[in-house]
Amino acid sequence: MTTCTDNWEQVEAAAKLVLGDSIVAMIEQCRKEPHPESQLIAVLHEVQGKFGYLGDAHLDAVAQLMQVPASKVAGVASFYHFFRLKPRGKFMINVCLGTACYVKGADRVAQRIIDELGITWGETSKDGVFTLEGTRCLGTCGLAPVVMIDDQVHGEVTPEQVPALLEKYLKKAKE
Image (cartoon, rainbow, N blue to C red; front, top):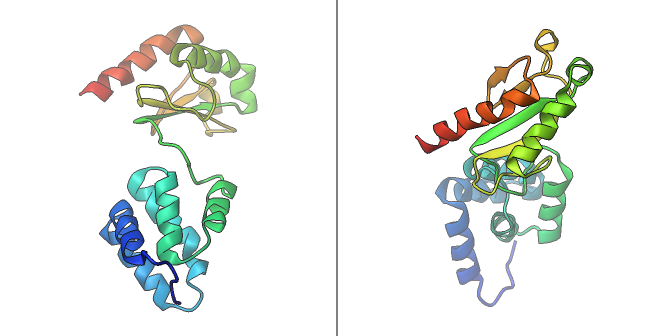
């Protein structure tokens, strides 16, 4: 595939700097294969794995190096729920909103988290410590309502316990 940009060397160098050697090597390997654009999702997974999210600079660099239209890269990244377009916090909070948890007050627990952190679903706290997500079921219905922070399950959580729970993780973030 031929590139037509007058300043391709500068564009290529900037894109490589954004993505790093391992991802650039992956893209170069993809470009040697027929239909390199078919590897776009795999490349985006690698980028997100390295950086934690897909920022505008990442998407543009992938588009440039893969020679795929930026609109296609952005479209794929925004279509799939797995991809994050904003940075995540150090700790991911998942509030179970499944039936058992909801009946036992998960909505009130979630509201307390929202009030304490000043964020809503899908957002990251201003200090970059917490990202809040909802989930349909964590499979621990007997512990309802459940909040999972990273891979740690907290069962029978009440709204009154939320500040202490968040404080515990704030201390961890400062370590």
